[in-house]
Length: 127
Image (cartoon, rainbow, N blue to C red; front, side, top):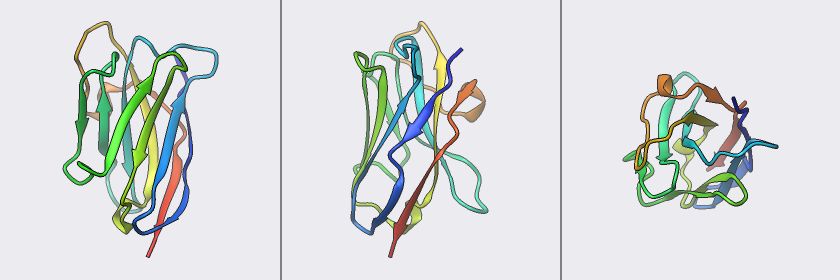
């Protein structure tokens, strides 16, 4: 089991950028497909982006495609979400999630696919 921990959230202006990080201290994420979810007040949790265990295959929600980039550094065992051109509707708590897998080129789209979750980090985009 792993306990993902997110960092990098904060308050930014419209059009600004943030980079979120997700890591599991003392443990490798090499065998985990990863996802970033977000939940805004009064709304359901939604998938933002996902990445396969090797980093070779990625997914983006239409709402963030072209603005956000998911990546991973398996040496540092860290997954990133680079968020550019931020909009007020991006305001949410962002969660990192992990799923153990030995498959290749796989990512997962549903909350129920991920057994392990971070505590969340707040992203606020001010207009």
